[in-house]
Image (cartoon, rainbow, N blue to C red; front, side, top):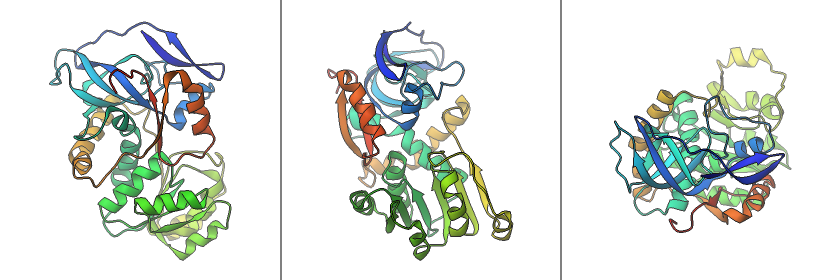
Length: 320
């Protein structure tokens, strides 16, 4: 079978061995895959997959089950979307059956392909690690990103007002349309966020560049969840603020979590979040889809930082 792999900084559609479908696994014929920043890094040779994971790109996909291993309740023909450590941008993927979710009623496979990674990330970090409660105030850096788009909708659905930092007025309007209370532009003075704080939870994919500001903006007993290093890996922290405000700084990743952790997370997601798609309270924010032959253009579009929401790559148009 063929899969998209990062080779010398470019995405190439190459042959690779098919994987056996073992106990507790399912084989999925892939219709579409979501693009994430981790794919950009892996394509550039900067973010190798965890040991044992596929070398192919793709942390999420959607498609139709073509084979079911022993011990799984899924059926051949079921429409699913999957959270992966790698391999989603391929003709097919073999995945732990517990890491698949049913495609929400009313959504296409392309829309479903951009759900698992961002909603799992937002739910894990805001509600499980961040222990977000109704009424608590949230700050989302990179609010128009895929994770930010999911987080805004979740905050609104569960009763926590949120604000954002974004890169343009258009992105701020986009975030407000999803339910954000307001925010500031990165090119302006981020100190304007003080007008909206203090915040109980900050979800931060930026890191070093925003560290000092985050400490200033957090309320007492605030939680700062760092999920990325777009603004650098080093920072100077005033530990007196950490102690005085009883701040929790939580570093969080998802891709290298073990299978049981991901299974528990997706079970919680299916129970708490997936019904909200059927109710229309959550919507996939799919900005654009690209054909497989245009995969390089898809990656360059994501790298250009002008995407509001998510990008999908169409793997099998016959299934879409």
